[in-house]
Amino acid sequence: MTTSPTRRHAERDLSTAAQEYLLALRVMAADGARVTAAQVGRKLGVSPQAASEMFRRLVADGLVTLGEGRELQLTPAGRAAADGIFRRHALCEWLLTAIVGLGWAESDVEAERLQAAISPRVEARLDELLGHPETCPHGNPIDVEATRRRPAGTRLSETAAGDRVTIYRITEEAEEDPGLLSYLEARGLRPGIQVTVLARSGSLDSLTLEGPLGRATLGLRPASLVRVLVGAADPGLFNVVPPRS
Image (cartoon, rainbow, N blue to C red; front, side):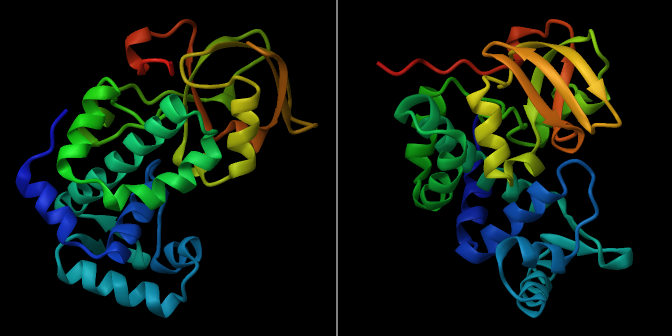
């Protein structure tokens, strides 16, 4: 996968703060959620006024539109820029998890520090080293083209006892919960892994799985943030990174 020089230039002309806002909007709206400036502001820890001012600039730059109910949406140019930012973040996460050996939650924090410092040359070499991934380590599509090529998946919370499924992706919303990320990783519940649903209880608000490291229990809310594919999935959907030496 390559990124055009024009797109790279446009992304890198943005301030660090503007990149943070575009990436936050991309992540928060990834599964069709309605997102406002105030919500992005809360996520980034800034005031509603500061968030509104930044989005006024991004609207003026043609990167974001403001719709009914003050809903924010990325324009095609804004999505391309946000995809480029997310792509660098994802490559950093792959490097930190698969090569350096950090955990999911820690690598997400460290990737935020590294992503803005990567040059186009280093980005291209990382992409080659990591096998041109279509997703981040949690299975989320790296850009809009990958999103179109890949199936949507089913919420894990909608499965029934006895179902055999493949963990497909840990949604961007789930990535916002370091505790959930750490639990899923510790139980071996990563993209490409098959699990069996042992029990689903609406009254207890929980779901029990048999996974590669034994049983795991999730609340239905956290389980709704995990996407699965029924049965055995195509291995080609999951990136294979060379193991650490």
